[in-house]
Length: 252
Image 1 (cartoon, helix red, strand yellow):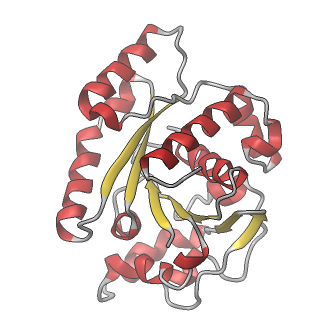
Image 2: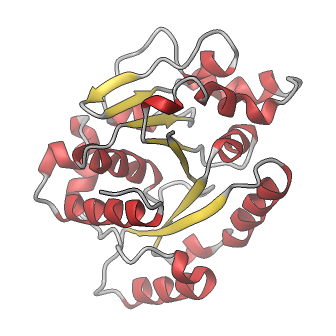
């Protein structure tokens, strides 16, 4: 039965999509079967992996016009792509009965096929994000190690707590991922210490260091392991992936 994980932060530019791609890719390297869900209307996840336009995307699936139709990126890694049309989905679904559970229902037929389903949430706290959280066992929060990244943390936690109380009793904050980290910068180190005071052991030991290869890989429509498996970015995401697998008690 696939474990569903959402990556969420309502701030853009924190490394959320990069983390979805490369956690999924690392799991595939370790022999897991992974399905990525691009739930962001900007479709950066789909673009970064070079997914050609599919007849049916997550938008059609949410509207009930199709089932989930994964596209295979590489062995062990599939994706359901997004489209700009998804930006209108929240208004279109607002009157649907059980609208917060549409994504959970879509996962049921495919859960047995995958070890993990990883959702790239939009940078907002609207209906699409509620669908992701209602369907998830864990939510991971990527945080850029900058001062402004700390703003709004309380709001994210409040939303997660409300979803747990009202929609999904099993939802848990699985971890906090420090991204774009540079140990030479005092500010970066201070932000990490602040995050640890707030989230404690939820903060992953592995921090994703600032690495140009992570920025270059999407331009080549590749994950970091296909682009440069010897880069710092690849080493960091593989280490993070192993931490995740230990936390969810799945053998590597």
